[in-house]
Structure formats: structure tokens, C-alpha cells
Length: 318
Ligand SMILES: [Zn+2]
Image (cartoon, rainbow, N blue to C red):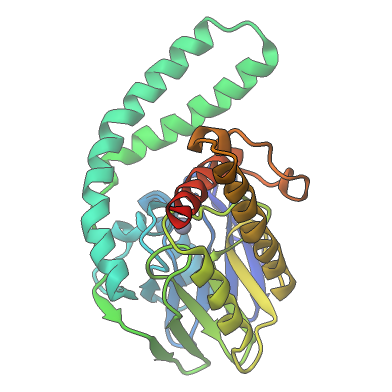
């Protein structure tokens, strides 16, 4: 059977009934998601950054499995993982941790209000820039950005708050006729509260933004030390996890956890050095990306991480 197609993501089958949905650049997925067929119903892991992409995800899940979507997990509160919630039917139970639900309630309405103002402005700016540009390479780049913002503009009226219907504190088990899925939180590292979906029989875990593969991970909404502690808990899962689906980037193995274990202390050290020599947050943000991470996507995130770690190092040195 040919894979069903969405312009927002590609489907990567992991095993029978379990699929990773990997975001396509320029589309409205914005992050990766998961489809897990429990045998009689489907649970989705994350709902992307737009109802349009989430709508495709639910339809494709039904086509691939023949079973209806009945549950969706929001891994954490970030907009690129849960703004697709409104596309899901009333018969879909949206699940998150209790702190994640509270953060969605607090942060999503002002974000949507801000998007309704900023996206038309940004698009108008880009269209003006396009008309005044002559360099073919830049025209191509601006053209791609315009295409993206046009998609966003069409999506704006559909953005709405849809809160999780059900919360859990540490772990909840979803029992199906074919398999069992565990929704687990080990606390918060990337944000205040991060949840994963663990499939013990298949040794697969969807870990959302606890793993960025080939992207700079955003550190500033969480706690880097806790993040590394959570890695130990993921590695201690029994049966062992063999396949990890990250929030951004390609499907990985547990070896990929080593990259963040290097990244966090290296950046912390750089920030501490700036504090020691009496530098500023701007100095920290202006540092060159260390060679080991210079090919990762999202250099602005590196600069923001350096600001965040500088502030923490400055407080610690007082
Ligand atoms: Zn995130």
C-alpha cells in the first residue's frame, strides 16, 4: 500500500501499527508526532503546531490502521506540539500532565492573539521585501518564507484553545486489544513538565523535545540538570528502549542522547567563562557555536540558550 501523503509531514513506519510522523520543512507540522494503533483504537502523540496538520495526522492514522483516533497526548505545553488539538473530534480524549494543562491554559490564548497581529504584518513585510530584491538566491529564500506565511495566514482563523480533557501525575496506561502504551512523566527538563509515550513490547519511546536530533534544543523553559537526570530514567526503562522518536529531527537510537549530554555542559562552561571575565548576556549570545554543534539547525536557539545559561551562571556566582 502506498503511504498516504501530507504536505506537512512524512510517515515513517516503525513496526506494525506504530508510525512516526516527521515534520517537513516549510509545512505546518512544526514538530514530529506519533501514531500508535492499540488494536481497537489509535492514540496520537502530539498534535503539531496547526489544526490543518493535525487533521491530516488523524485522517492518515485512520487510513493506515483502520481504527479511529480516540486519544492524543500533549507531551508538553509548547505551541508546536499542541496547537493542532482543535482539529480532533469531541470523541478524542486529549491527555497531558496536570502542569502541562495549566500552562496550555495560560500561554495559548495570548499566543494566538499575538499571532493574529504578527503574521499578517510579517507577510506584508516579506512581500514588500520581495518586490525590492534582485538577488536570485535571496528571492528564492524570501519566496519560500512568503509561501510559509501564506499557509500560516490561512490557518489563523482555525487557531483556538483546546485544553487536555484528562490529566495524570506520573504515569497512565492505555490498554488496547493489540498492545499497551504507557504515558509517563519523569518531571520536567525541556519544560516544567515533559511526558513520553513508551511502548514496552516494541521497545520504542516517543520522547518529544527531550530529544532534538540535529537541532539546537531550546533549554530556556526548563532545567538542564533535570533534563540529564531524565535521560537516566529513560535509559533505565525495562524493557530497554531501542528506538527513540525525537520532537525534532530523524528517528534515533539511545546513542543520540549522548549529544545533549555533551551540549549542556559545554554551553554551561562557555557561559561561566563569560561571567568570570565580567562579560554580558550579549557577549554570551554572540559566541561562535562550538564546532561539535555547528551543523545543527537553529543557530538563534543557540544564542538564546547562551543568554539563558549566562543569567543562571551570573546568579550562581553572586
Ligand atoms: Zn518544545
